[in-house]
Amino acid sequence: MSNRNLTLLTDLYELTMMQGYFESGSDETVVFDAFYRSNPSGSGYAVCAGLAQVIEYINDLHFTDGDIEYLRSLGIFKEAFLDYLKGFKFTGDIYAIPEGTVVFPNEPLVKVVAPVMEAQLLEPALLNIINHQSLIATKASRVCYAAKGDGIMEFGLRRAQGPDAGIYGARAAVIGGCVGTSNVLAGQMFNIPVKGTHAHSWIMSFPDELTAFRTYARLYPTACILLVDTYNTLKSGVPNAIKVFTEMREAGIPLIFYGIRLDSGDLAYLSKEARKMLDAAGFTDAVISASCDLDEYLIRSLKNQGAQITSWGVGTNLITSKDCPAFGGVYKLAAILDKETGQFIPKIKRSENPEKITNPGNKKIYRIYNKQTGKHIGDLIALDDDNFSEERNLMIFDPIHTWKKTYLEAGTFTLRLLLEPVFKNGECVYESPDVMTIREICRKELATLWDETRRFNNPHEVYVDLSRRLYDMKYQLLDSLNEFVDGADQ
Image 1: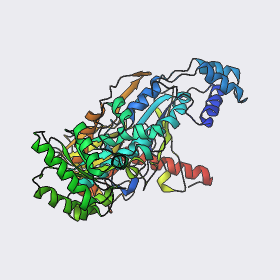
Image 2: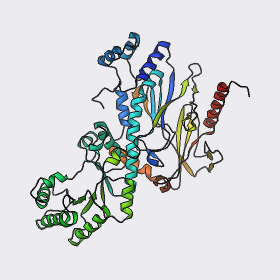
Image 3: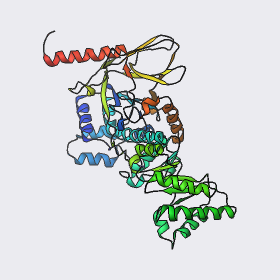
Image 4: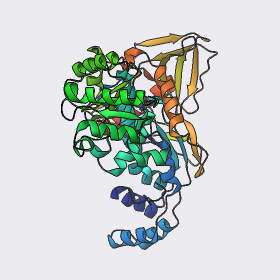
């Protein structure tokens, strides 16, 4: 990110709107919320990721001479506006939910409080980064959940939609729970584990399979995972692998990390038979890994069939989130600062589609946990000046089905504010953890969810409620819009 100027990674209409604000002298401070409307892949939750790259992007926001010259060539921007862009710098505030946190629809993952021209420019790149990495982190968490503690390797570079998707997808996959990646550049950039075995071409380039195995074992005795399905898995591949492991043992070479990889065929049957053969030869601790178009559903099925696989390489379906290729995050205006009163005036988007009606105002998010179990009870979106306490009873209610209420007695729950300051007055005040630390944060976050929320089919819906003041504000605004549109007295 730091090696590229991404300032023009924006949609043209952001710049034309900016010029409109500039020409009209509009410099209002506004609140924009970045959120999403539905969980990807039919999941009961999502995992937010990408904040570190958003920070890099904003820190480097500037229009170069080449950028200005290109915009001038379009013939739609005036010189006064182009002069303004020459000195552009982000000066606002940003709040965000930390990476690795589990999140739910309609709650702001990022809140931008800034002059309107600055806030407007951020939209496309911010969404591009957050949408992509949150999508892949969520998918990875589902794949890892299906594996029930087995290691998941991200193997998708060659199938990703371009270099950036491969690099940052690998980062997000590790945040979501993968133990490593095959992507060496991602390993270097983010200091995450890189792992791999060898290809079928390695076997085919030697006179025979056994020679190929012996050569590989000699080169990599402490990481000797042999691909056994090039010719015949059970009649050739596994017996030859056993022969090599036996030779290593007899030569006194420690068998530290060794085993086989299956990449085709009936993985359940082949892994069971291979396990029998390896155990009979005394290699009870040999790893059986598998690849071959895996996803969370196939891994779950193979586990249920008793497959003897303990390590999984997942590529295309993970790095592309093949069943749900877009996260669907949006960026909406929520409030405008009244300079005279210093108060934020709430703004709302009305839609014929109820799910597209936005939550107005300058907001914060409380996460509610059961004090005894540490399990997640629900989230409460509130106005920024709302105050809730663990020392007072709390009533939360479903903002759609308002008769659904939950009463929490003081002392039985804990509260956590999710949005943390990232930028203040244009300066970054947040230090992003390294990826492996974020991965651990995600692991702990996922552990607060009930299994019913994590199941793949018809997951339990987590409550994301509105405070009473926010709820009343929202529906008063909708009523006032109805009066404005209808033009009728009531």
